[in-house]
Amino acid sequence: MKSEGDVAEYLSEAKEWIDDGLRGWIAQWKEDEELKRMAEYILFPGGKRIRPALFLLIYTHLGGEKERGILPACAIELAHNFTLIQDDLPSLDNAETRRGKPCIHKIYGEASAILISDVLLAGAFSLLAESPFPLSIRLAGIQELFSALCEHGVISGQLQDIRKPMNSRSLDEWLEINRKKTGRLFQASARMAGIFAFAPESTMQMLSNAGLQMGIAFQIADDLEDILELISRQMLYSEGEKRLQEALNQIRPLSCPLLEALARLAFFRQIPSPSDEQSSARLSAEKTL
Image 1 (cartoon, rainbow, N blue to C red):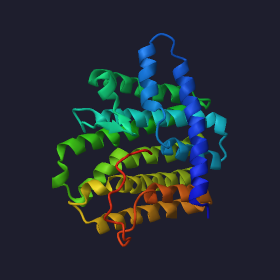
Image 2 (cartoon, rainbow, N blue to C red; image 1 turned 45 degrees about the horizontal axis):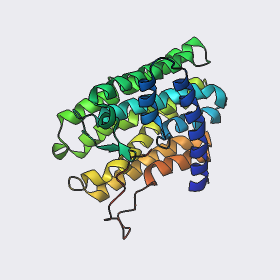
Image 3 (cartoon, rainbow, N blue to C red; image 1 turned 90 degrees about the horizontal axis):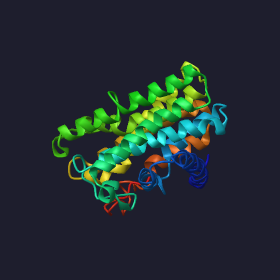
């Protein structure tokens, strides 16, 4: 079984590959220096790049060449950062900080933040269109990312989030929102890996289920502290463990221990068990992945 150290080493390597790709994308811009500064502010140093790292891990495990997978991986990260900017806006979460520094709208203003988020979203689809794969594969990747962001994904979940106050949600409603806001982009990362690696339908189904459950487990880990007063910590922890186990059950036929370790890290990265003597301690508020 791969250890947490193995996963940390892989994430560090993957982050370097993705960061290089993102810097190369920005370096192509020649006319608007402020736009470049805003893109650099939101993208760097960035988090652990877990979504594109998940894509690259599955893609290469299925036989894909890492170099060919960099553009789709960067597209996933651009799309993710688009969602972060939008989520932080004053009209939505009205967040103050992101990844240990002021949110971009605090530095450049809300209008500029919206515009740079537009650039990142457009850039994501541009990178997919430019990626070195047959047209049918590129189109399938574009459609998958679109679906994860729009009607069945992040934006739809964000609408549900603002329409249903946190203190009036049931566990099922909370899980449905997080299935869309977080689970779908994890699912898309896994499915896109299969798409770009020309995986058969049976593998695509496994990746679809594993990615979704991994994303929901990840979000339970990320938000657990925020809802302690609304839903039992033990109930949520058990739900997260169940989702993780479902993800692992789907992953095991792929025979990729590093992927299993990455799934575990996504849930256990900062959560003590409810039976842990420190379970009542404050969890980290920083969202770095």
